[in-house]
Length: 163
Image (cartoon, rainbow, N blue to C red):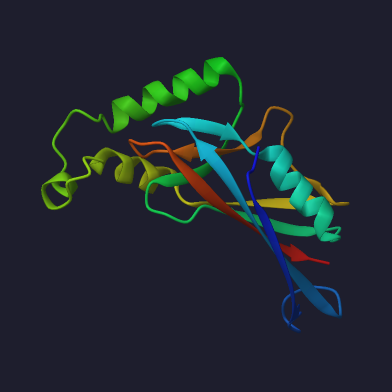
């Protein structure tokens, strides 16, 4: 559950070559915050993203979900205990925390593996919506991943563009 929310609204003109309907498209940005308990904490944020889209008043477009920071990531998973455990195990195999990372030579935070993991997953995810509802598969949820080796509050920006 987010601990804080902030929303801003703007407008942009649809270009003649954009394929968009005549008139301005709207841009609504919402900032959410989520407490993350540990390394590879994975939070299902689908409901909060869907709520931001509904509250935007837009009916169709794209919601871009973005996490600022070099050790956070956003992706889609089937959010159930088996997949979450498998995902964590794969992250440990791909980028184990107990091997040398050059980052750890230059920075004393010991989280070189976290930067690699976040870089592989990526900081953003575009999710289309129509009739004010996210277009996701039945078993597809939007998840926030804390790759860092410490607990922290992660900020998530949901920027919604549409009409």
